[in-house]
Length: 235
Image (tube, rainbow, N blue to C red; front, side):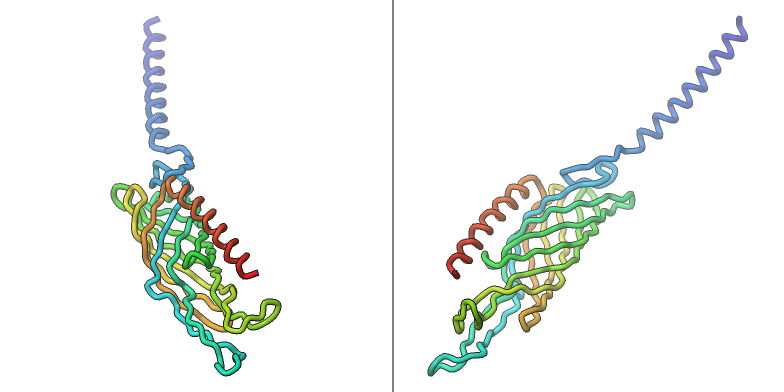
């Protein structure tokens, strides 16, 4: 009876050690969490982010458009335009955290330049988490931007009038944000199309939060309304 009691006590002690080791190991392994408020590993394995940003064009790609035709007594028509002006945009993206204080992912961005010309981009991101959940986010990708062009042909022939055309190229940004997602961003664009190439520089502010969701939705609705009004006025 005494020897059986000793064996049971040793067995229970071993089982207790195994359970303690297992609990310790599992406590250090975070669950595979999907967050809607971006945080570094181990708080989040993956996260969805919503950004709203307002950008000032530092260099807005100015061009002088010259008509191919002429007006009676006035010669060629010239118009001064900017291809890459000030813009506001909303961003939705997805990133996956790594254990080395980095996250990688992708995003879609939709905005309006000069309150009338849409721009759409798809970018890849690499985020570096700093102390206290602040971050540096570097992104690069493809850009499609609507730009002003001269209307010189059917079906809406109007010598010297401005119409709309699309140009395509690349865009890139570097953003720095504090732990609440509020920060600064700067970047560059290069696009080509409609017989010209344009380069632009921009800088501004970005916020990353549920507030950005509302701001993005509102900006999108207002932008679509403005675009519809302008398009209707050109008919």
